[in-house]
Length: 341
Image (tube, rainbow, N blue to C red; front, side):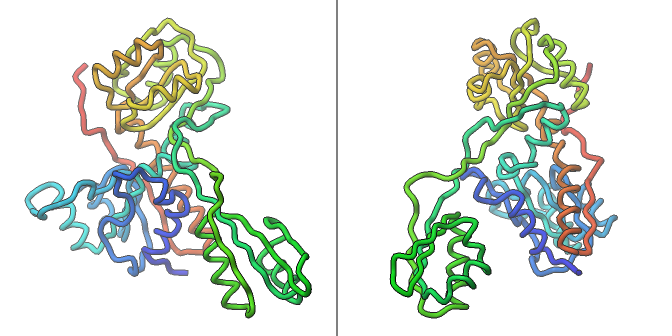
């Protein structure tokens, strides 16, 4: 079955819902036509000229990146600038650009899960409190004759309480997130008559998503050994760190990309070492002073780990939905920084 851009967007919105993103972020559709049919999708960390050229070579109609192309508002599009060239290439080749940024940092099987998988950390849990799911209750009052058909069609028996205190009527109470509840109400209204509804938000909070991860090494290491281990696993050209390399490390907190401001959550979670990127001098000073060994794995290296796993996840989901789409990972990505050692 042929797929459109919007079909792939729906999959991405399921894997990494936009509501998980930070308020300052700009994930989602960047440039493109949601109704265009596509046969190939390319995943990458950034939308660059080289990435777009690779997409053209592979005849990809869509590029999915972690970093949004349009992060800050544009006042003009100058085709002589790097960003202008990228936009021109995308539009002239009918390629859609889509991004999953901080929502993919939080999502299950996102950036930070890819990071702990590469480091082979065990017993992983979330680190930084994030999006809290709203819980709504839908009360449905309908004729007794509708009881069995409703239960069978909407599986009420699995997630509802049923009351029979009204003569010839039955009452269902169903809890779920807002989207599910509103969709359920609409579907029931379309099929059944003489149904009364009450819908309201519950006072207690639902499940909370977490950004970053905390996990355990298979065996204890010294700080230096742990740093060397991370350097090897992430293929880092150099390992930048602050803190005591002689301390024992068993528990590691990770947050791909710029995460120096979240070190306290790693420490609160029991981490001996915190891996992130883009450390500033005084932040590193404060973190090391608190007793936590902190490693700067580089923005590129701590986030590029998601590119191939995301392609695999998308391919499996497209196969499940019987979409004739090939998902490929961009494997030529390079850190923008070079190092003289």
